[in-house]
Length: 107
Image (cartoon, rainbow, N blue to C red):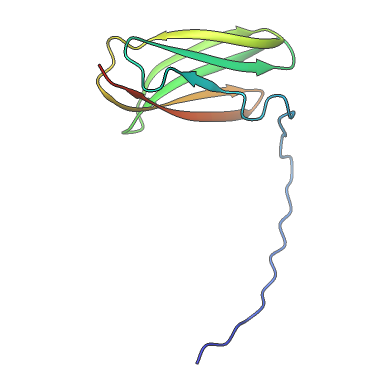
């Protein structure tokens, strides 16, 4: 016989930076799957430095670049023609916050 137990969990967030609504889920990758070039777009609320990182399925960083991002919509084109076919993750880091999206390279 199973007994249901009620339990409570209290969570306290300390120093948890929050992205503005306009920045949440603003990282877009296309086309996906891609062959030779991946378009990366994101929104920024102000001028800031962002770091773009491409990570392979083994967790290895295979590309990394720091970019000056402008207020509003930003776009970067990544040459993927020399990438092997497979699954990758694009990560954007700005102001201590990170967003990641999966993409596929298929030649």
